[in-house]
Length: 138
Image 1 (cartoon, rainbow, N blue to C red):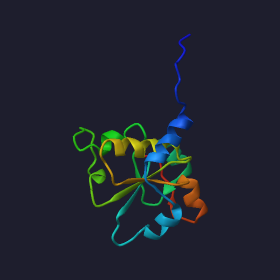
Image 2: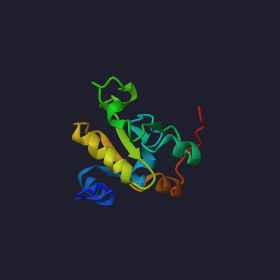
Image 3: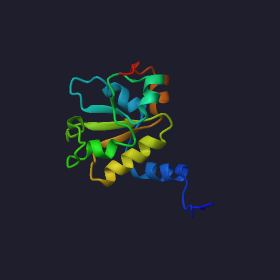
Image 4: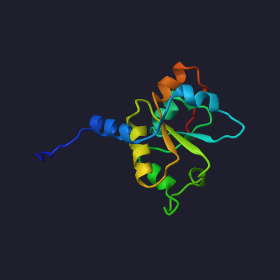
């Protein structure tokens, strides 16, 4: 059996990332939601099955954890134009903050500075009465 020389587990990795990224609380994000300026873009980084099962923030984009770097990188053949606006702040969220922290850290490491993590994720958004929507399988 192969034994890994584990230096850091996923919890520690996510916690370390959280010390190096920008975070936005729901209290900060909610008043800006739906602004005419539209400077916030909410991005759900969960797996599509989770989104279909439990819904998402109304109007949020979806960029799964496994593709987010490819979709944000303008030099990638998988780049999506929605993620290329320097005037927008991309607010990443998941369910328990770990994936969104890792995504935000990765994007910041790539030089994409206009990203933040939604502190508390989708559960905190729901608890605050933030608008959500169901997503149907395509």
